[in-house]
Amino acid sequence: MPNYMLLMYDDPSGWEKLSPDDMQKALDKYMAWRQKPYVVDGVRLAADPGRVLRSQHGRPTVTDGPYSETKEILGGFFKIQADNYDQAVERTKDHPQLEYGGTIEVREEWGH
Image 1: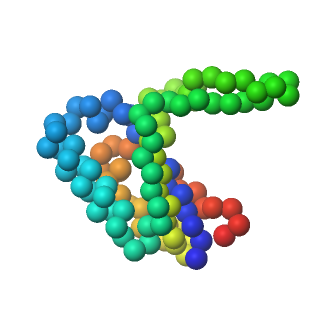
Image 2: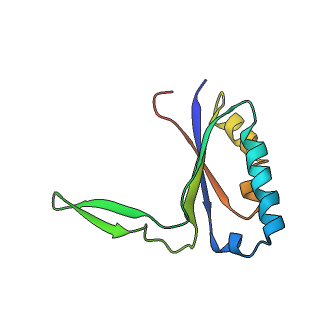
């Protein structure tokens, strides 16, 4: 069965507006979703834009985070198993990331 990466994008400033109780409820929903039988793994990334390396004239250059018009950053990922894209998307529709205003990009792992 192929693996699919669910790339989680959101505006981290939105999380700062939640009360401690609402934040705990959100975390509980994420942890519950992670327990589904087809979820292989998941990782939350630090709330910073990271670093981007690019090659310029054959030499690496390093910049702070990706340049983007949006305030959304990659905040983490989940890996799930599904028979095809349609099933992967269907399995993702109830993810709490969508409830909290984020975006999920679904990508199949190469070689599966």
